[in-house]
Length: 115
Image 1 (cartoon, rainbow, N blue to C red):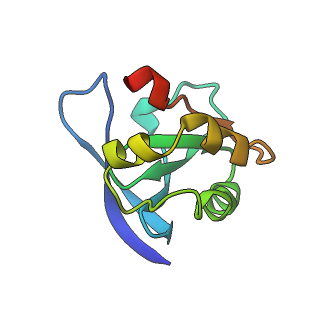
Image 2 (cartoon, rainbow, N blue to C red; image 1 turned 60 degrees about the horizontal axis):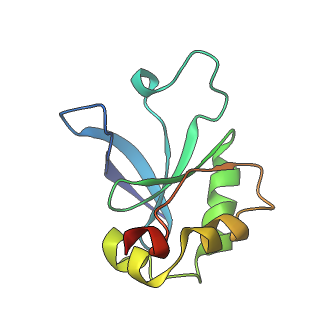
């Protein structure tokens, strides 16, 4: 497992936010959401994200995010760009693969929505 600096895609911020992340699967990162992006009541502080900076799901514990990376590892080549993955993989498929995880799937663009 590699540790790296990971740049987040945050719509409400003009400047990039960098976090320390691990890469449990190629192209997938697990990281703690920065405090400035959390609400005081948010228990789901760990994220599973794509290397592009887009978050996929959120979790209460880092181990759960790591397990989720294993659960979706074979759905796509996660080292591709987000647009390439969206063209090949429906967000519902990812959500379904994460259904048994204790996390919360974050919405994703579906292929039908992109057309």
